[in-house]
Length: 397
Image 1 (tube, one colour):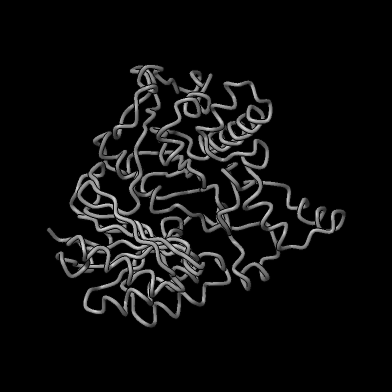
Image 2 (tube, helix red, strand yellow):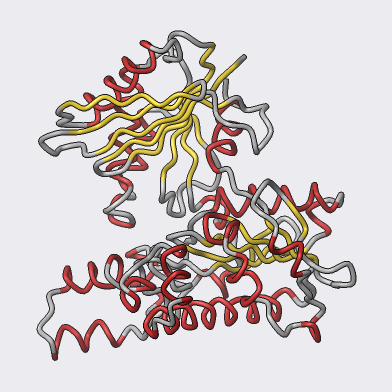
């Protein structure tokens, strides 16, 4: 079995999976795990393999120590990089800017170019690059491949990609819409084309990646023509802790009238807003429990969430002109039948009709949830970004 190691490095964590690129999307990875609390007095490495869970606690001062501990734990259970036929390592990079539009074989030059994009993603790209450099040292004999979250949206039309701000300043500072979750949107839209047994070029789709972070995309044939996230992942839909779209003047208002420093406003809009900012929770299972208990804040947060989601769906229907499929994915999209039903409620006049019984079925894989007479097909397709990254990486092996 040829496997790809997929790494997603955060500022204080490393997610890892050993994936068979030829597996079905619903199959479990060969091994998976998480290094967490990097830089804290005590860290933890968790490994799942062969139906068992293994945990090691130790100080993890940096990513080098963290990944080394992960590899040692994997080796103890005969699933380390040297115990298997490892053909490549795939790395998730959040921001590719205008430099990267497709996966790239990682070289020193590619690392330098990715480092030059840190100002566009100061919270994400540094950690992603740390993970790349550590993994290349520990695994020097296999190809390392970078897959960019923004790559899928690289070719959006200028009318969707550009903001109405000073043109020269925007070009100088990189201000534009880049979009995120691109690997997920591309994977899911390709899967829908397979399910509908049509070439992707013949399908117009709206894909809804609804998790703690959330985004949607309008895809015309093989080309995305719009997406909700912008220069940063803060824009667009209401999310678990992010505000989504707000009047930019709110930033100036909070700074001038409440005396809030810019960094505090940044934290407010990214970590203390969204569903959590209104209801106090960002887990939709907990939010549903609160709604059933008639908690007014939970109900308000949910209604704001659905209102914004419907606004984007409606605008994308107009942009596309003809819609063949609407697809829900990610944690909330795959598992919350209420969100799916309410997002598309009362749209029969536009050819959208959900079948309540199909919609209520548990998340067991890709499935059609629209009624048999729905003109626009509505799907639930579990996303698998790690599998997508593994397949990209294998191509360079």
